[in-house]
Length: 307
Image (cartoon, rainbow, N blue to C red):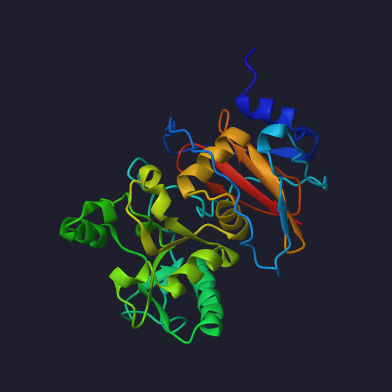
């Protein structure tokens, strides 16, 4: 009898006693990602002194992913946040954002046009980022582009003279509603990369769950040229881990696939991130407590639990 891969993983990490089985039928095709993540050296000296954070330094060394056991409850379905959905040249958008999730960015934040919309969770993150930015610099940050429809993305792609800065329709993060192009009044696009304000954004966006999506040193992995203005909402613990370990989003997803997760403390909260490939349409979830779930659009699911 073949033992499902997810059971092997859970048994190895000692998770089976504290998880309960949740039935989940997959409707989407899965796709294997054969790309290997580049090794990343942890950053030092960049975390704000106000942030207390510590992650497992060597995922390969083995560590516990145990979650506190609690009263069991029946769960009939899964609410997929899609916050960690990988969308790039290789992985097509899984579908449009759900009804009501994309909202007007104005007047919550400054925008280039009042027609700019964005996912509500990303908007809250950007708003908090802009509040902090105003305290750091006497300038105005604004969103020039957020959510784009398939037709809008097609127009952007077809009109781009340099395709290294654009993805074809249905392969752009902008269609998730979770991406925002952030600019600064008085600083042109060509000058943004060397500005102190852009450097501040790159080093502080993680505090609000935002990731600089296309760094200068990751073009070979992302397939997109350096865009100091493009940020993607993925959630605070995930953005923090990427920043601390100099990972782009592709590398982070590959890391999770190989390590099966990690445990970290951030701002007094303990996080457990678990990566699972469903077997026969089944994944395991915490019995209780706070958690959310996101498919990664490559066949796996990431369960983020905190206490």
